[in-house]
Image 1 (cartoon, rainbow over the protein chains, first blue to last red):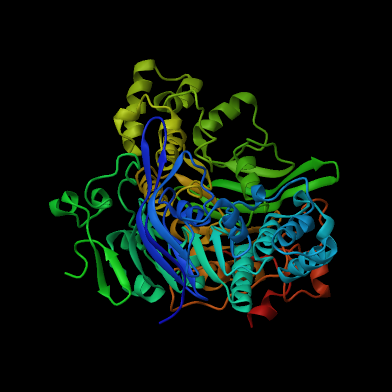
Image 2: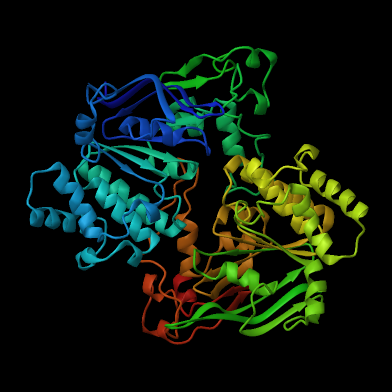
Amino acid sequence: MAEKILEIKDLVVEYHTDAAIVHAVSGVNLSVIKGETLGLVGETGAGKTTIARSILRILPTPPAKFRSGEIIFGGEELTTKTEVEMRKIRGNRIAMIFQDPMTALNPIETVGWQIAEAISLHNEVRRDEAEKRAMDMLEMVGIPMERFMEYPHQFSGGMKQRVVIAMALACNPELLLADEPTTALDVTIQAQVLKMMQDLKDRLNMSVILITHDLGVVATSCQSVAVIYAGEIVEYGTVEHIFDHPAHPYTNGLFGSLPRLKTTERRLKPIKGLMPDPTKMPEGCRYAERCPDATEECSAKPPDVAEVTPGHQVKCIKAGR
Amino acid sequence: MALLEVQNLKKYFRTPRGPLHAVDDVTFKLEKGKTVGVVGESGCGKTTLGRTIIHLLDRTEGKIFFNEKDVSDPTKKELKELREDMQIIFQDPYSSLNPRKTVSETIAEPMKVQGKMTKTDIRAEVRSLMETVGLAERFENSYPHELDGGRRQRIGVARALALRPSFIVCDEPVSALDVSIQAQIINLMLDLQEERGIAYMFVTHDLSVVKYISDDIIVMYLGNMVEMAPSEELFENPLHPYTKALLSAIPEPDIHNQTERIIMRGELTSPINPKPGCRFMARCEYASEECEGSQILEEHTAGHFVMCCKYKQITN
């Protein structure tokens, strides 16, 4: 049995506002195998980022409210840790790459020092030692050392994202949370960054959670996939399970919506309708309203998770029938 | 007969460091009811090209013909008439709508400005436009902030359709949307084209989207049109090294047929005062001395143009 670096059990996160309660994440279970990349796929508002931020406990509370759940990282329960203990983990053993490289960097510090700062916070090293390691990190992500003393505005989008990656990897994290790391980048730059992340992952023996809405990115970089819809994992399995035998109607809908390069069809098959209002989640299956195969039974009560083949879980009453 | 003809269009912006060549020598034709896709990375000039054609920006050089008529330098009156025929759908459905106007006010705006319809007619037309683009009547008095991205983009489409144009520039109309919503909007645009015979210029960075809806595709790099071909032909037989790299960089949602990626070195160079010669040279794996000479657009096969002095060597 492969070693699990991270296990999340029954995670429930809500956002409490004056007007209503937003059910952002409702009972999510997932695990990351050591050395693997898990893809979290879903549309805007599905709860992908909330899951990642819950792991690091960096959600603003309020409005966020952590209802229940266990987050076990390397055998330790994170949810009961004190803030001081969490600080030793954040950026050190678990690092995060944020979606927008333009706003993730401090505009008034040099990029070199921003990387060195992460190193000196978590390691007892002298400043010059930290700077030397920061320079090595820059080289590793393909930025010449001479640019150490430059400021973020002097870098292009792709370069900034490399700086953010260098910063995240500076302390050799065991787990990397990458939140849409390439969404803001052009395709050719995206290809460069994905390739680089892959190489670094193998070299540093990291585990990665890759958050994305792009199934193409998942196909190129992940070993397992969790498809998220309206705060719930609707399908979970290896890339082979998801891409070769998609079993949840939402996963099928996502594939149907994608324009493909290698087909000659002239019409896409979009999913009708919109995601449910997260303050008024339906009683039964949350996808029922948009699902082409929905019956009355679907709206009556929430579906159980069925295991269609070992390791391939689907939250749909029709799965496995 | 071409609906739109663009000849050697140039748009330079003045900057303190010299002229920025946003669009440099673009030539193409667009037939009635057809779609031309314009692809390229951020900063390649694709948005500027669209905006210059519909006179949201003044051109620096070149000619624009619309319905066989030279419209390069329209008078104010001519421009107002031209706007009935040429419209635009903007990229960002969040910032392209006036937050203080309701859905129906936004859609009615172009008809009011044009001043040719009565109030009652406008109201009826707004209703029918909302139905056409799939916006329920109950949203008539909603404000943009109450609606999601997909519905907002439907307002943008309805507004562009209001004056019954024959040509619409679509500037990344689906880039800000989720895939399931993106597919809804793309299908809507294809339906409208079939029903109304509208010609589109579809500007996007997403090659898989452009393949779906374009008849011809223009690939731009730093203001230059580096390749132009019918859609199928471009995807089957790309000639320019940049087009090849761009096509191979797209992550395909397929785990079995992963093609070998061409990973390009470096990034776009500055379009300010570019050197003569091929602008892609710095990132091109085939670059050599002859690339430093000025490049011309060659017709490889009928309708397939490429701007690369070495494309024959590379392809063979």
